Length: 386
Image 1 (spheres, rainbow, N blue to C red):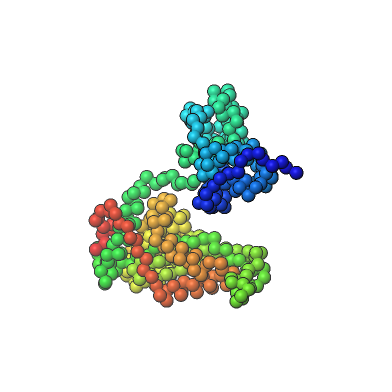
Image 2: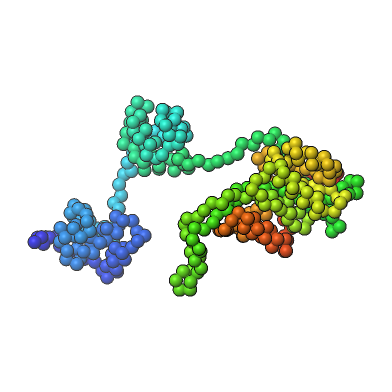
C-alpha cells in the first residue's frame, strides 16, 4: 500500500479549483498544461504520488515537480512553463542550406535509383553524408527535422507539378486571331456577320472528345430505398464494350450542335462532320471553323474534300498545345457533367444512341457560348469580316 505523502495539503480557492477542472478537461490547451492540471486535481482529491503517476501514465518525478511547484508558487502558476534561457540552435543556417540544396536535386544525381526524394530517403542520406560534408549537427536528423526545414521554404520535393512548355513561336499571334473571332461573334449585329465580299459568315467551334468508354454493368443497378439506401447501388465490376469519340461542331451564333459519334476520329470521320456542316448551313454561306492542329484536319483526304468545296470552309487554328482556347471544350465539359456522368450501357450502339439523344436535348434549348475576356486585343479584324 503506498505511503501517504508528508507534504502539506494544497490550498486553492473555489475559482482556482474550477480553473484546474476546466484545464484538466480541455482539448485546446497544450498537453503538458492539461497533464499538470490533472496531477493537481488528483492531489487535491488525496491521491498518492504513485497512484497519480500510474493513473496518468507518467513518471513520479513529474508528479513531484508539479506538486512542489504548486505548493511553492500556487496552483495556477504551477500550470505554466517556467521561464528559461533559450537554447542555442544546433542546426545552423548553413546546415539548412545544404538540406535545401539536396531537396532541390534528384536522388539519381547521388547514385540512387529513385527519381524523387521521400522524407525518409532524404533524412537517411543526410545522416549518412553530413559528417563528410561538414554538417555534424544533422547527424541525428529525422524525418520530422527534414520536414520542418523544407516547410520553412515551402518545398515539397516528393511532389510533381506538371507544366507545359510553350512550343509554338506564334502562340500570341494565333491566340489573338482566335479571340478576335470570338469578339466579332459576340458583337455581331442581329442580322449576323458577312465577309468582305458580302457572303453570309457562320462561325463554328470544332473538336473531338475521344476515349468515352462504353461500360456495361455486371449486375443491375439497385434503386434508392427510403429509409435504407439513399443512393443508387452499383456493382463494382463492369464489362468494357469499347470506346467512342464525339466529333462536335458548336455554332457560336445560336448554340446549335452538329455532332457525330464514331469509334475512331480519322480523316474520314472528320470529313463526314464537314459534310454535315455543309448540309446544315445555307448554300453560298462561308463556314468559319475554329479547330486545333489534329492531323485529320489537314490530311490529304481532308484537303481533297475542301478543294471540292472552294470558298465554303475557312480554318482558324488554335496555337499548338492551346486547344483550351477552343470554346467547344466548354460543351464537352457540360456533357461530362450531365448525360455522360456515370453512364452504363448494354452495347456500343446504345452508347452512340444515348450520346446523340443527349445532344438533341441540348439542341432543344441551345445555349450560346461566349468568351468573356478580351483584354489586350487590337481592334483589327482577321479575314476581313465586317
